[in-house]
Amino acid sequence: MKMSSIVLCFLATLTIASAGRLISPSDLGLPSLSDAPDFCHGLECPPFKLLKNTSQYQLREYEGAKFVGTTIEGSNFEVAITKGFTKLFRYISGNNVDNAKISMTTPVVTFVKPSSDFTTAEKNYTIAFYLPQQFQGEAPAPKDDDINIVDAPGVTVYVKVFGGFGTGGSVLKEAAELRQDLTQDKKSFKDGAFVYATYDGPQKLINRHNEVWITATDSAIDSNFGMAISSMSTSTVDAIQSALAAAQKAVAEMFHN
Image (cartoon, rainbow, N blue to C red):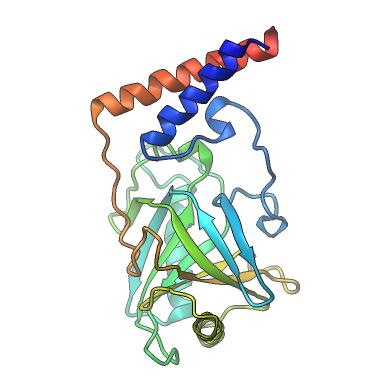
């Protein structure tokens, strides 16, 4: 292996990271260095780094990523998720301008705005799917005007895991308990909204995996899921493309020398 190849890969990584995102092995055409968690059931799920793990909750750092989402208003929790899931499933099944078939990912995430006492929630839910790596660079535009492709910035979240089937009442209860644990531990977090993440389809009756996420205050994302569309200058894009091409060439040389 040539030292120049190693240096070139390192410099390419730094160039891409400095442009606003971290490079992953898939960017270089290589397999991921770590498998997805078991609760993703072999489906793609958003990559994260586990920062802390206690008996009550975890602290995770998620990379920025593309999601496809839709907002359902005027419906209760269960109905809103069903409506939102149906719209998004049609999108990944080909109801997009490219008629592309997009693989299902996990989890299905729902953004919930609870009352101050966590007993009720606004009838205004955003449901979203993580887009697979194949479409993280560019995703086909939806045909349905109610569906949007959004670039979510990186986010640090406190996560509580629970089982069973998530209902409006049970999800609010789990989120309230997480909030109470964080308050007792004197953790800083954002009020106003939380995420319900479900990893299992309705056909799975036991050992289900659900989560609620509350955003840490040092996170880039706001409580209303205001995901800013990243904009890069032409020179930045050119630099990324040049660095990535150089890195791919260097990796090829490593395996052939």
